[in-house]
Image 1 (cartoon, one colour):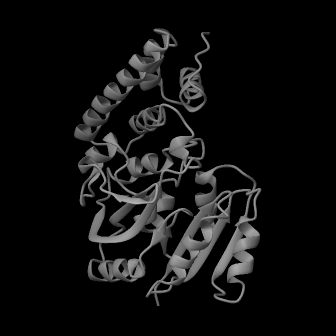
Image 2: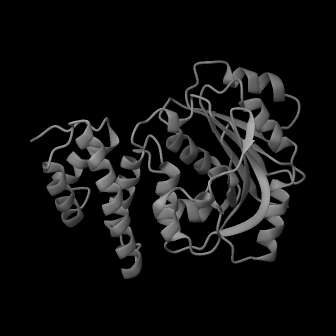
Length: 300
């Protein structure tokens, strides 16, 4: 029997969650369990799940939490999972019916695999579109690509629970780009396998997506790279690459804020101090406040 726990975080997705869960129930390989983590929804998300699936499958569990964000929800879902493998599914995405079976067979054939992703179909505003070429999925050692942008889609992934937990799970301080942050902690030491089949449907263009809610998303990636440079996960080549990408992303942020007359040269000195002294220093706390909040700089 497979040992896959499906974790579906959701928040106020009463109009989408049923299709997501239904796509799991339609799998040719049923998972061990489905854990729906409700992140404090204020609509009828939970009641719709209960009404729709009450008699269909006793493997659905609902964890009801206070609203603390998707990272918190995913982490609690993994903590409560009893399977050795985790398959995430965002509540606005859907799997094709053979997704779990095809990935499970791949892992059986390649037992060294710890994390596996698939290709994906993009639907934007109701129409199928082609992803940009630079977002094409790759396999193997993809750390350098992962620094540039988020190169792994959570809903496409099957990964070992131990790997997720050993890398610290999702960073609950991050309101967005939490997946980018996790892959930066996984890919320096672990290759990502790719099953070159289209097994996920990703929907976009709706206003409740995190990417539509936060401006200047690269600030979260800057935080993640700084945190990574303060860790012991990187070899010399990886560190050089991370420093190069950090410099490029910092300059883009800098120029953008200069155009808005909202940049202080003190921030450049602060970054140097944080790279030297770490994110847990006084300077680190000030920089985190700037990057993770509203990009409002308070001299001091």
